[in-house]
Image 1 (cartoon, rainbow, N blue to C red):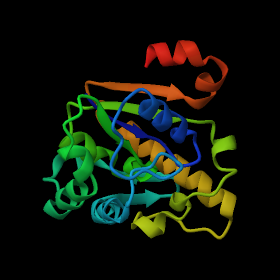
Image 2 (cartoon, rainbow, N blue to C red):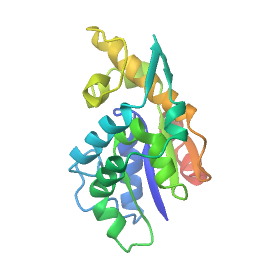
Image 3 (spheres, one colour):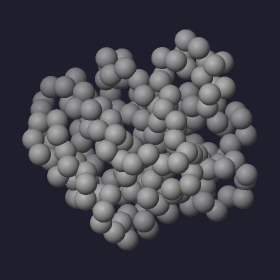
Amino acid sequence: MMVTVIGRGHGGTRAMSHTLSASGFFMGAEINGSGDLIPAEDMYEACRVMSKYVIHTGGLNWDFSKLHEMPIDPEFIRLVESYLASVLSDESDNKGWKLPETTLVYPWIVRMFPDIFYIDWTRDPRDSILGGHMTDNLSDFGVPWDRTDDLRLSRAVSWKYQREIVKSTPKPKHWIEVRFEDFVLNQHATLKRI
């Protein structure tokens, strides 16, 4: 079984990554304190490759339709396979990865890996945007948007963008949405559902 955890950084995704690791999942050859598979530069660059095909239609609206129809850019595939090399080559029965930036490329990850398990981790944006994250400035990943100098607003726009790109993507066959708040308040039942 292979699994990935998607969701905005500072949304509690590390709790799921650490839970998977403690449950015997191989989460990559090198993992940081947040449970992210590192180094992540190839995945960051893959984000920039895919974002070229996202169309910003103004405000909080984007057209992701091209991502679901066009051939996946070969450079994207090369970068993702390079980033995931330790996971893809590992022979463990249970393995996966967690990196919040995976959410930025979710449509093509689903197309590359249609049979893996996806844990879509969400958190109330009023909590999530209190902490800064690398994805706060979408321009760093080539995503078109109406830039702002308001830090909290840029975090909120990033949160919205990530929710919209996930919503626009046809659900893979193994997908579950988990709310961080449910994990905290009713951990036993939430883990049982997962």
